Image 1 (cartoon, rainbow, N blue to C red):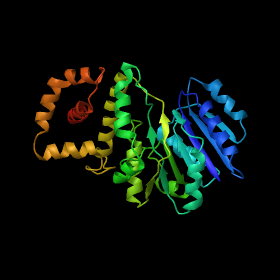
Image 2 (image 1 turned 135 degrees about the vertical axis):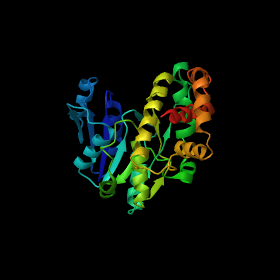
Image 3 (image 1 turned 135 degrees about the horizontal axis):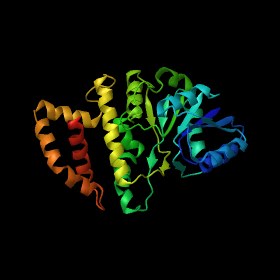
Image 4 (image 1 turned 45 degrees about the horizontal axis):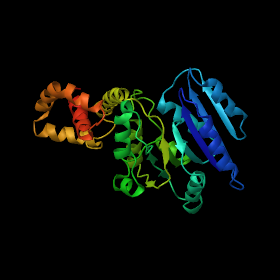
Length: 295
C-alpha cells in the first residue's frame, strides 16, 4: 500500500501524476493513492483539476497558502496508507521502474524508515541566465547514493523520499519556522536526533525547476536568513550545516570582521561572476559566507 504525496504551488503537475499513475497501474495488486495539495495557487488550477478524473488520484485546492512545512504535514496526515512517497511538483520521472524500485525497498526491507532516492539535473546546458542554479545543482545536489551516504543526513533533500507514516509522526516538519527554506535541513536534523536512519538509493528524478541566476541568488539570501533563524532559536547546532560550521570556525579565529570587510568591497565583482556565463561555486561559497556574516 502506497500513498504518493505531492505539494504544489503555481505548477502544472498533471504530467507527473499521469506518469506515476500509469506506473502504479502496471504493478499487479498494488493498492495506491496519489494526493496532490495545491497550496493556494493562482495559476494552473484548471489544469490540475483534471487530476480528479484520474483513478486513485485526488487534487485538493487550498484557498490560503499555508507554506511548505504545513502542507507536507497535512498530506501525511490525510494519507490512507503507511508508506508515504513525497515528491516535489517540479520533478520528472526518468525511468519506468521508478515506483517498482521503491516498492522493492518496501517489500524486501520491511524495517526501513526513510529512503532518499536522489536527484539529477538536465545534461543539456540551459540558457545563460539559468547557469548558476544548474551548475550548483549538478555539482552539489546530483550525487550518487554512495556519495550521499558519506554524510547521510546533510545530503538528504525532501523532493524525492519514502518514509513510514509511523516514522513521520515522530518528526514531522516544523510549522513554527518562517517559510524561508532550510526546512529540509531541520527535518534531517530531527531524523538524526531520533536515531532514524536514512538509506540512500539511486532512484533519481530530474529537477525541472531551474530559476534564473538572479532569482536563485535572491533565494540564497532568503535561505540564509532562514538558517540564521534556526541558529538563533537553537533548532540546529552550530556545526550541523557546512556554511555555519565554516563561519564559526572563522569566528573562533577572529576573522569574521575581515570577511565582512572583504565582502562589502567584493560583492559586486562576485555577483557579476555568479550572474554571468561561467559561475564559480568557489565564489558562490564566498558569497554565502560573506552574506551570512552580515546577518
